[in-house]
Image 1 (cartoon, chains in turn cyan, yellow):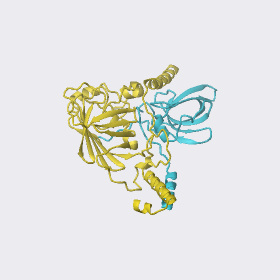
Image 2 (cartoon, chains in turn green, orange; image 1 turned 120 degrees about the horizontal axis):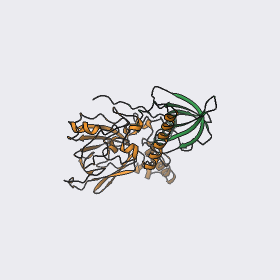
Image 3 (cartoon, rainbow over the protein chains, first blue to last red; image 1 turned 45 degrees about the horizontal axis):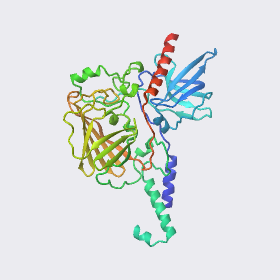
Image 4 (cartoon, rainbow over the protein chains, first blue to last red; image 1 turned 90 degrees about the vertical axis):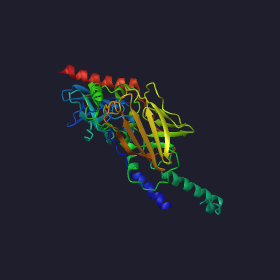
Length: 135
Length: 282
């Protein structure tokens, strides 16, 4: 009995929460074929429905600053992927990999982030609309 | 077990009861030994092949918190049966963000995802079907949805559905036990405004929805939802066919998930501002 119990607990400990794929309100605006990786400074992290979003500033070589807004899924889905409302603080230096908007606006859908402590988190969340099979 | 326990001394009985309680708790798919707050649902691993054999289903009882995991979300919507000409006309008004007719962000007019209008029924069962608690009273079955933090009342007191109902976002529902493990709900009277699902499929006021809740065993429930709407679809269709739901531990505290209009407006404002800034730059 005791061995079985320990076995079950160990197995449970090894299970890692996968990030759920959940296309939410729509993703047709995003350029699915494109991925950008940007380094920047967090200005705000908004933990809200229908999407959480991260605002961060990116400086280019000439010193010009671009204000980016990138979104994730909702807080519930992100919690299941290990994200939290406290994970970013303004001033944090982060690396964000994202799918940008097709129209060139500095908006994107987060694919993954690298936090100041080096931790990398995937954001899952298929922004692209998935076509259901034809009937 | 009882007979054996009686033969044991007090401390041993205590240990036996603790081990038995632990075994009962860990046999739940969510594996939750600690009492926690704000559960977002079962881990995806709970939906793999079961490591334990479930106890048999209790008779005429759907009580519990049930989770369909990612299969309940259905972001892309559902493939409808062929549309009638009436539905084809309605489709022209609906600009979804998902599914085969998806449009880009600025054109989406989904009343739920852009303005936080109520999801309505059956959309609440066909999209974002997150953990859902079922409560039974002597004359009702209550369905409490985590998403939107809304509930439905299914009457089991033998009443008939109303003959001339006023439109409701969540309709009028009556249910009956078809056998000891299958509860069948009929719902009518749904307002035409809410979409049927996330793909922007329409429905008419004449829509009739049948839900079949089949309790397979203690830990497993199957949900089948059938759409019968001759005004909109040329034949009945089944967007949810035996969708598997798992029982969550009884001490699960669910997150609050509310679509607040002010939050949705703030999100859209940010997106609009970014879009505007990019356009002006060009």
